[in-house]
Amino acid sequence: MSELSDLYQEVILDHNKNPRNFREIPDAEKKAVGNNPLCGDALQVFVAMDGDTITDVAFKGSGCAISKASASMMTQTAKGKTREEVETLFAEFQRMVRGEMDEEAEENHLGRLKIFAGVREFPARVKCASLSWHTLHAALKGDEAVTTE
Ligand code: ZN
Image (tube, rainbow, N blue to C red; front, side, top):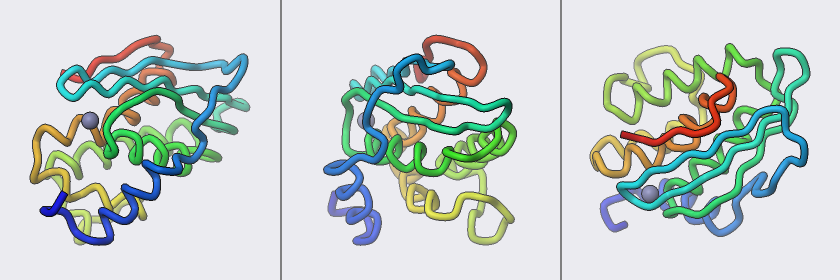
């Protein structure tokens, strides 16, 4: 991890060691399984909705530090947002980690998620960082499983 900034390392290590919302939601209305075979990350995302608003979101599973930290921060970010707001964030996150967005110059809603911008330098890590977002997106669409390609 020597190639990563100190702040990035600190946040990733904290969320990996102590992931937020790391639990199941019994009777979750929406849930999906996400797999990133390239790295071996396997996550399950649970979503509780009230109308169009995400009232609770949680995850379980195993994976590398980046996938777990990203899932942890995804749950913190998505909670309380509408489906539309989450889809906007998903699109922005994707563009950021693929290097298709200048997140400092362009208006966006990423906030603390900008910490993951550095993964664009490491193509194999892009899928680790975006797995939980793909899985949330699949759950909201009603798909039960998603695999990063
Ligand atoms: Zn990974």
